Length: 265
Image 1 (cartoon, one colour):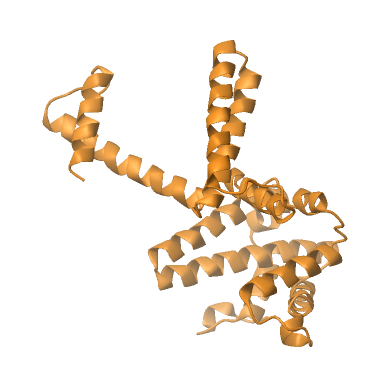
Image 2: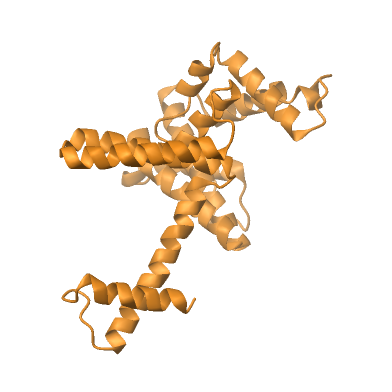
């Protein structure tokens, strides 16, 4: 057996062998115990850490986090290899075949010299290979597990491709006002189920508006949260400097501090 502690550099073959070693008897009790279900949350967390590295433009961190993603792929592949269903080579084989089929303008004689044409071909080929005959079939295929704003955007775009959409942002904004009124009525009724439904409709309408004004709703909400956190930290610091107890102070006092911080930006 290879002594992995003696190597100076490692590659994908080493990673596959190390994962197999960790999972086998005499390896790591924790790794051996894991299932797809027990580590699926780790995959999500590692994915977001990759996004964090990209946002920070930190190349060293990006390299590290991509390695963590690779480890997750190898982990799941090893679990299936042990069960005899597929292995890492099957994963590589499948994705290579998919890339070749979905790039006929590179590996075939189809002409696609614009990004829009490439994407159009991609969707057409994808729907054909997946057996999707209607737009509804394509919409159903959007994972429910996606972040809610992202899923809403994808569903709306697919509906828009069939012409089920407003002509411009004005129609989407008018719908936003309509949904706001319906939420107010639901709140007045006190029906929690109805309130949740109308609140969801309002959020869905907000995503619709974001498409028309070409704003990524996930990114916009993330930045709004960042802004809130920054302002709140400054308000808390300002309150401490002035001897103001935020917990016992009326909202008017806190709102005044908030506006003061906002004016200084």
